[in-house]
Image (cartoon, rainbow, N blue to C red; front, side, top):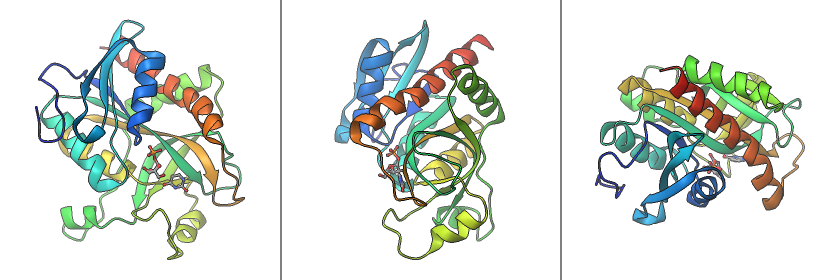
Length: 238
Ligand SMILES: O=P(O)(O)O[C@H]1O[C@H](CO)[C@@H](O)[C@H]1O
Ligand SMILES: O=c1cc[nH]c(=O)[nH]1
């Protein structure tokens, strides 16, 4: 096992879905995977491996925020050899044309976190999605008829942000706000593996609308299907 994941080498698939919420990991495993086996319960951060359309896929909760996802992604890549990492999360819309229940594919992620400033000695690294995963996921989203947007998101360190930072990023066309994509992209880039963030819009910073828990579960299914179909396409392309 690694420090935070109680799996043996070989227990975790090459391609993984990463929801922030460990119960979303359980839901994905139980709803979509054949023969899901739970490989992790350390800190209640559930992880499972099963198959989807014959392709081995894992799903691992990552918790909320950059420090938490950074730990899981680092161990998944460096201790378990994971190569394709797809975050499946929720976000707040920052643009009028991005509606509740739409899906965003984050081509890039700005951040209010200082983590990359520290890593890159005060210089700005641009956390970017893998083109192959992004292109494949966009194609699958269109095939599934999902209302999808592609663009920049903001990975914020503060959920209840009263600093006014959100407005600066909105004015620059940022599509939505969440809390992890910039870290996922940076960890993946440093290791030379593929990463993508898919987000379902759960609320709007513009209108104040929110989805109910049930609505969120149902509409999150579209994002989950896009990610799983992308996993199959990546396996077929090998
Ligand atoms: O739904 P998840 O994947 O947790 O993502 C979003 O929800 C959490 C905040 O409620 C943060 O983790 C944010 O990034
Ligand atoms: O980080 C998040 C996630 C969902 N909605 C938000 O407004 N922020």
